[in-house]
Length: 263
Image (cartoon, rainbow, N blue to C red):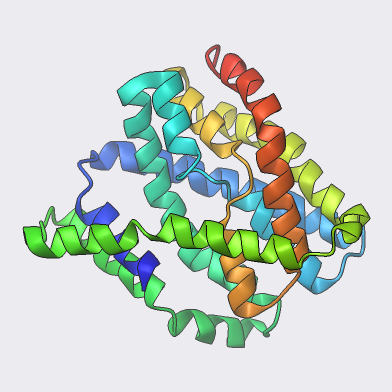
C-alpha cells in the first residue's frame, strides 16, 4: 500500500526532462546489467546456495539511492545534482519493482512462477500508471496528490522498522559466513568499479557522471530486505549487508565524492 503511493506520486509530480530521464535510464540499465552479471558469476563460481545468490544479487544491484543518496547529493552537489539524483531514483524505483521482484521471487519459485508473482504485485501497475502520467504530463488533483504523497512518505520509516526487526532476530555469530563478506565486498569494492566502467562506456562526464557514480555507490538498498521478507530467501545476508555497508559508507563515501568531482 505504501510503496505504490510513493511511486505514483513521485512519477506524476516529476518535472524531469524526457532527455535527462533517457540518459540516466540508459546508464542505470547498463550499470545494473554489469552488477547483475558480476554477482551471478561470483555466486556460481563460489557455489553459493540459490537463496544466498539471489540475496547477493539484490544487495549488489540495488543501492540506497533515495533515503540516503538524495540528501548526500544535495549536500555535495547542490540543487542541480539533487535534480539529476531524482531522475536516477525514478528509474531505480521502476527496476526494483520489476527486476527486484523477479530476483526475490526466484529465490523461492521457478521462473514461470516468479513472473506470475510479479503479475500479482500492485507495485508493477503503480509504476505503469506513474510512467504514463509522467509521459503525458498529466497532473493529479491536488487532494489526491497530497494524499498519495502523505501515505507514500511513511514508506522509508516502515522499511527502517523492518530492518531493525530483522537485525534483532539475526544471529550475529552467523556474520562470519563467507557469503556475507563476499556480498559486502561486491557492494563496497566491485560496484564502484563497475559504475565507473558504465560511465566511461557511455562517455558521461561532469556533474551527471559525478552524481550517477556517487549514487550508485551508496550502501545496499533497504527495500531489498522487504523483498526477502515477502518471498523468502537469505534475509540474514541482506540485513547484514545493509547494516555493514551503511556503517562502512561513512568512511568510503567521502573519498568517492572527492573522486567523483574529477569525472
